[in-house]
Length: 340
Image (cartoon, rainbow, N blue to C red; front, side, top):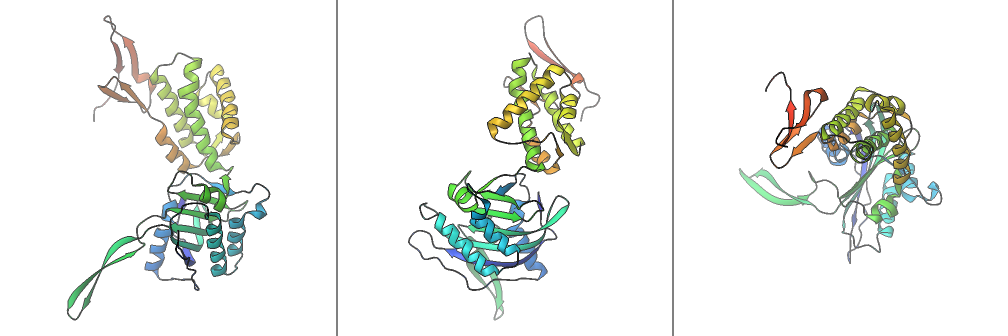
């Protein structure tokens, strides 16, 4: 989702969170590294962790967005205010909201970027990263005609335990959030305070999610359906998203389900799904290819037969038949042109 190949890490600051019974340490300088090798390392460290994310968020607040501390401080950085002062304020904000939680100490980086690509657009961005641990690496150098080895601890290839990347997109900042726990309240709510963004990325994921639920849960209640027929509908659903650039709810339902009763059931299920999951899905939106790639993995095109066989069905429902022989044994008959 996030492409950092052409991005530039303009500047970053590092502060140390002491954790329980240890002092916090605030840096008095920021770092700017312009060399190609240094920039490549920083892009991998700060942007690569977000490369495969297909879920977007936006800032929120129970009263008003102006009271969201992280939102305000990131906006100040974007507006050109001093990164060191803003990064220290961000660190103090994290310390304040985590006082009543048993959190680990660690390094907190705050970085400012330009040229971060999402889709076909590039944006400025601010990233906040919490590393709880450091990795061990071996350093070698030559001295006095020999080789010296030393073991050191630092940050290189490990991923942050928690992070948030704030992209300054046109309508409102778009967030990508990393949490090594499924949902840590002090990080997700108290520090960031975010909600799913109503954009084409989340809409794509939501429609695929509700379609899978509809085919596997609701349709079997409406019809007597063979497993092969369910898989055929799942495959047709994914194929629609792979072959179209825009989603149209009426067109999608007609192409995939075809039967008017099934289409009516799908529309009713879609409305209930949005209410139950507190999401809003537009009837028309741009399809996110990355979200399709991620969500398609949950569409299982496999028929499991006892403990003996698995049949993978990737298309052409007409090439597979189901039946029962004279002895009551169930069978599938498969037609094919070529064996690989």
